[in-house]
Each structure stands twice: as structure tokens, then as C-alpha cells.
Image (tube, rainbow, N blue to C red; front, side, top):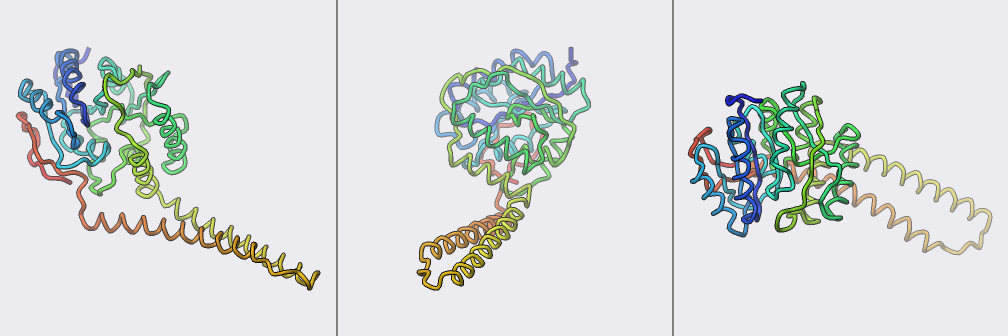
Length: 322
């Protein structure tokens, strides 16, 4: 059993979850407040429903526990989590979803695992995932890419439901550029990783906020923020295509010598032009993506901007974006 002095922060990015965030917070308080020194940091990520009002009511009802930060615009899950991490004060910080897919009871499992082992982060994994087929396919692709781009340990599932130590949180929030990827920041900071098997429940209401556009944006953050591997791939691809072009040129010369009546190869010409042009466009586009992100970083585009804060605890001053 933990002591009352053990500080646990729970960071929840909230997006269009007016139907679930109230019951979730009340259950968290009911099951955990007597066990830990608990704070719940709710980050309203530009919700279009009554989520902000519901969060405000929760903060007024439980001013010593619930802290609410409403962002000026929707910035995506990872930016919203960064906003929450910048406000969290616990020795352990649990990041969880707002839809009841992560059982409240599993928070205890995460904290106990962190206390028993010498680790900076505890990831969860599921015997059976309750996401949609589209979301599962996106997670599978994300996992395979992370193995290469982030040198993620094989078999490690990058779940959104995880625990971070206070040390790791302090290191992560040093990152102030506009395109954060939480798991990339974790993996580049520490290799002290623990995993624990937890239950995964169906969504209590609504549907996932992840669209194909948001998944593509997330993958781009992984590709360009934490590795130069795409640029190296473009170099290798350029060399490979150059070799193919040289081989085709040699083949054409040989065939011309063997058959003087060989008709002009318009089809081959078009294929070669398209092949080289495609490689050039991919390489230029990749370089442009890196340069564009550098420009936005130097231009101080914020990760988030807090429009409204309901923070009776007042654990940290300031409500501006990072």
C-alpha cells in the first residue's frame, strides 16, 4: 500500500468527451484519492462539445485535485499531452485517454510497477485491443516504422496509456519545438523501460478522434523530428536509380551496335524520365519538409497556447504556450 505522500499526477487530453470525462474523473478520485496524493490535469484540446464546461464543473467540485487547462485551438493529442506535462507536479505522471478504454484500476498497477523496478517509464500492452480496424492498422504501421526510425526495442508497444517518472517528465518538457512526439522524446532520453499487461475496454461513448490526416501528421513528426534516416534513404535511392540509368544506357548502346535499325525507344525514354523525376521530387520534398519544420521552430510556433486555466491548487505559475 502506498503512503498518502506519494504524489501521482494523471494527465488526460480531452477532446469531445463531455459524456465520459465526468464519470472518469469521479471514478479516479473515488478509487485513488485515498491511496495517493492525487492531482488530475485535464487539457481541453479545442473540443467542440461541452467538454470545457464539464471540466470546469469538475475543477470547481474538486479544487484540490482537478486542474483544468483549455487550449486556444485544437493542437492534437501529443501537443495537448505536452501542455499537461508542463503542469504536472507528481513524482509519477500517468498519461491516459478520456474514453474509459484504460481501466482506472490499472493506474495502481502502473505505479506499483514503477516503484518495484528501476525504470523511468512503464508502457502498457494489451492481450486484446478494442480499437477499430483502421486504428489497429495505423498502430501496426507506427510500430514497424518506430523500430527503424527510433530504434525502438522490438516487442515494445508504444501505448498512449503509460507512466513517466518525474525525472523523465522534466527532461521531456525541455523540448520546446512545435512538433512533439511523446514516444520519440521518451526513447531518446532513456532506455530504462518497463512494460505491464493491462486490460483494454471498448470506448464508453463517441469515436476515436484519430483520422487519416492526423495519423499522417503523427508519422511525419516521427520521420522528421527524431531521425535523418529519410534523407539517407533518399541518397541511397538516388544512387540506386543512377545505377539503373547507367545500366539502361549501356544496354541501349549495345543494342544500337547490334541492330542499326533499332527504332527510337520513346517508351523507355518516358519511363526513365518519370523514374528519375519521381526520385528527385521525393528527395526535394523530404528536404523541404525538414527545412519547413526548421523554419517553424525558429519562428517560435508554440506547441500549445492555454486560453483558460482553472487551477485552484496553483502548483505552477503561467498559462502561456511553450
